[in-house]
Length: 207
Image (cartoon, rainbow, N blue to C red; front, side, top):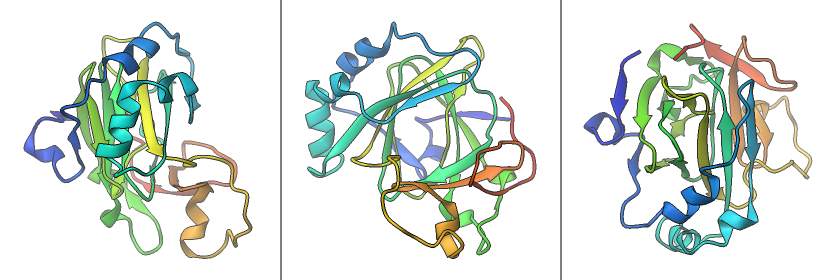
């Protein structure tokens, strides 16, 4: 795949690079944390990350004062596996070089299938934070070529990806995709997850 820059024009429909906020303290907390080399780990909310000065700045400047959660996703990954989306932007901060595979929610068909050939790849350099709009399909970042693992600080509206504690009809419409609070997921058939909707068609893209 062609790997593009988040600083280029092609990224503008998906999101933007975070500027004017010092992300160094967030990155310093995570820079020495070991990530698995045989899978992916995700923590939605980490109090140490949420206590830094940049957290308040991001809350106010990016989310207009809405409550947020700050956690991380890290490990070893080289495949698309699926796409997810949220109501609201997600911020990813690269603690080391990583690649994101992203697409547009508008390209999901009425039957909730999605053609993986529409995915684009972007390099997020270490130290860079990007805002992915709520209409941007994404999933776990991919490990960059010369790195053993990736580590991404993830910022989302508070409660996102938490366990669902309300009743809903899993068979109806978009509810088929709902896997956690504010998380709609479409998987490729190669990626097995109990209860997940398999609707990504075509190649399970590999970096």
